[in-house]
Length: 365
Image (cartoon, helix red, strand yellow):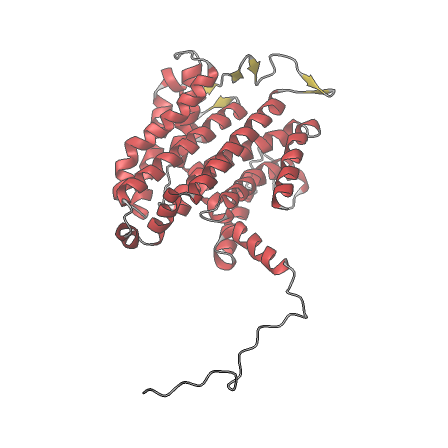
């Protein structure tokens, strides 16, 4: 049944570009990119127990790395090669920081990674030749085997014109599928079990032979590579990257995603990413139909859709922590268990043998 539901979900996702307009496809693209990054942060914070506030820095490395490697000024590499190198560049940045991640934990690591966000934002604003400064840079469209994920060439399938959003939708699905299966493979493997043991008790993990420093560092590098991949997909979806997007607020958003969805769960990180990404976009579009929410651009002191969305998922975090500490994934799992069919009424528990049926103890000679 699980395989059947999975195939049905994949079929529905593949058919959506034929029926949805560009706005909904754009929401889906942003959600898939956020889910890729949230899965990486979930491996680091939810599975390995390492607090990181610098996830936005590694997304920026992936996004700007792709733009510089594939664009002008820059090496002008083939876009597919530039995308792969951008992910590796984010992993290399995580590797440079991994000695710190291997030695500190908790709030100390959070403060250390917080410095990365401010440092990265300063570099993005001042390195004009690479990043374009305050105005950012346009993103070169991705090309694979002569196929362009842009509107430069006309493409029609089953009478539906396929623009950039429709083409990027399938790219996002493919990248998310790779993220999903690789992350689940990590969690079910020996390194994944070592990370869980490390999260539960460092002392017990060290006694069982887990190299604490090495596994912490490895988790940080893997999380950075997932963030770099999310940054590349975000850049392709936005078509222009600007420094102000990759700030502290983005890192906090990613923490909210994994807390709401459920720490240590790939499905939970995905659900949290969809919730946190979709809510402000929907409230912006339907602001004129919502009570107590002002239209975008209003300066009369009322609450805008973005601020209202942050209030709502802030309240969601509080409710999750109070009533469902394991997030939406744990809540859904408990609901499935409650909805499972009870055992047949005719079945009874095996009866205990009576005293007379028990063999008497022979006397000791």
